Image (cartoon, rainbow, N blue to C red; front, top):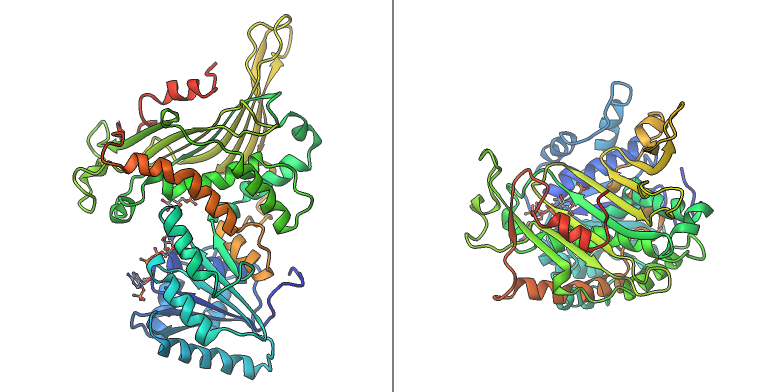
Length: 486
Ligand code: NDP
Ligand code: BG6
């Protein structure tokens, strides 16, 4: 177990608000169990689920246990041990009573273990509409000045620059930046965490990671399923807010930032902020927008077939955006972020295309390309030109391949993103959480674009069939933004 000095103690309390909900069920509790299973959470900890729904402790525990992952014959006893740490507390979000009772319950546990400096982690697995009410009640009734408090909040952190600032204005007087942990779960993904190591622990990477060698960079997010069942949520959000302004932009900053002076969370986040500030305005002709229609064989529904979305919705389910970073390292190198629902496959990857080899000896060799696959099956591979073995003097492209499933045996436990982030939070490590200024700049960058897209006279997204590669113009868009199809 890690023994960082900011690590919460063995008699900490974790309260998950919105414990009856989808995120708590699918991600938060399974992640807490995963950490417990792997010995990364103390076996003496207390976990309380809080929500308005009337649930008995038993109902609550059976909801939790139905979704736990990584349970084997060898470790199945851990399920009961974990459930023994958990209990349910019913209460409102906007009334003090539930919070006062919660304080009494937590205090009883802390007193029993003679804890004078309590450690309390509050996880808001809640719709943003109740963030502020819960934060206020927590501050008033369940806060501890003697000990340490950490508040985890989930995206969306606002809908645009103004609403994000509003939320920030509400939370800032209640909880300090040091106490706030804004989750962007992409920062907890294994390959995303590896970017800093890959770039800065390998001199060879550092040497070519700039405009002199790089022709273009793409960060691409593809999902093979549509918004089925989530249309009501998605229709007001769209793909740009859903995954680009947060997940993909976070990946981009880690890819493009300068070398931080250390692993100190502020050092890393300072560099991320600098690169965000260097991104130029997004021009309207640097965007490609799409909305999926029925699949070509008619078996999969189009976006507008969902009864929970407006029948004339122009909601964007596919977007590609070309960006420029105006600094010494990246001036002139096109960065493309693209993301889409209902595509031909589910895959998230980064693709760095290098400049061509000098002509003369070689007139037709392909460019090098470095691919970092975030999911599925994490991999890093570099496309290189190599002589065809034997008597041939021809060249062919091959891969220097580090696919994790082939390279690392199963003995390595790769935490799920949420496991990794809750662990960081428990250890008091902010590196992989979003800082207030990062958030502000990212909204500044995207808000004008979103306003343009969502205005009455905004562009109509191009329709693409469910299960396809996206809008037809994608190839020419990528070409225009520096990607060369060999
Ligand atoms: P839910 O809609 O399931 O809400 C969680 C709980 O909050 C519900 O069980 C309900 O509990 C309570 N709740 C719901 N609506 C309201 C309301 N209008 N007013 C007061 N309480 C309400 O949300 P999710 O669990 O899906 O998401 C929680 C947060 O996490 C959101 O901010 C979401 O955007 C974010 N998120 C979710 C992801 C997911 O996979 N679900 C992924 C990434 C982020 P009760 O009525 O019992 O109090
Ligand atoms: C969420 C989005 O933040 O990220 C979803 O709201 C998306 O629409 C999801 O599907 C993708 O996360 P992952 O970890 O499955 O790639």
